[in-house]
Length: 310
Image 1 (cartoon, rainbow, N blue to C red):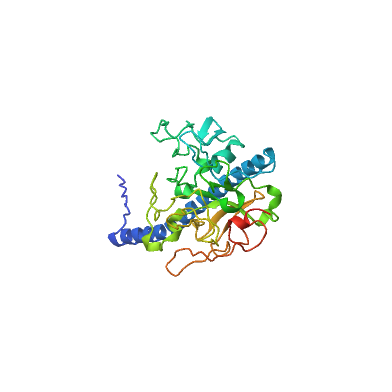
Image 2 (image 1 turned 30 degrees about the vertical axis):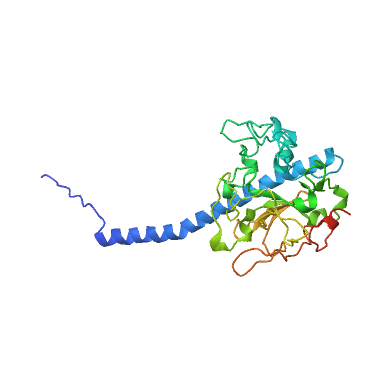
C-alpha cells in the first residue's frame, strides 16, 4: 500500500506583511535619530581630541619661546613678510594653529608657501592655504579648511594680538608678546575654541553658509581664526573685522555647546552663556558680555590699549 505525504507551506498573509513593515518602520524611526545623535557626539569627541593635541603644542611653544604665547597671526608687511617656519617648510603668515601644530609634529600644510604670490598644488595662494591635516579642522564643520576662515579661533585679544598699531612700524604689535606669567588663572582662561566667525554679528536668519576663501561678513567661518571675547569695546578696543564692526564668537555647534581649550591645556565643552556671551533676541551676539574667563586675570574688562598687559 502506497503511503503519500502532504506538505503544508505556511505563508504570510497580506495583513501580516503590512504589520511587519509597519513595525520595521517604527523601529527605524526610533533608531535613526539615536544614530544621528551618536554620530554628532562622536564628532564632538573628535573635536575635543583635536583641541587637546593642539593644546600640547601651545604649551610646548610657550615653554620653548621664553614663556611667550603664540601670536594669532603676524601681519602682512609685503608679499613675503611676515613668515615663519612650520612643519614642511617656510610659511607666509602662519596662523597660531599652524605654529602650535608644528610643536607636536603635525604638519598643517602639505605644501606650505613662503610668499603670498606663490601658489600651492590646490591653486591657493600663500595667504589662503587650506589645512591638509584633519587635526586643524573640526569634524562637525569639515569643510572649514581655509586658514583664515577656519573652525578654531584664538583668544587673540588677551593672548596674542599681533596686529599693528602703526603700519609703518612692523614691530608695533597691539598686544604681543604676552608672557604666560601674566595669566593668573590658566585653568580659567580661554585659549582656543570652536568659532563661528563674524556671522556672530548677524541675526540667525541672516547668516550665510560657509564658503572657502570668502570675505563675506555674514557667512559662518569668516575670520574664524580670530576669536573675540564676550565683552568688546567697539570704539577703543578690538574686533575681528574693525572696518565693518563685525565681531566673532564661540560656535555652539555641538548640541548647543562649543568646545574650548583652556590655557592650562585641558579641554571641555561650554554654552555661550557659561562663557559670558550676551545673546540678543534675534540670535546675534552683543558687545556687553562678561570677560571673566578671557582676560587671564578673572577681571571683567574689555581689551583696549590701556588693558594690554600687567
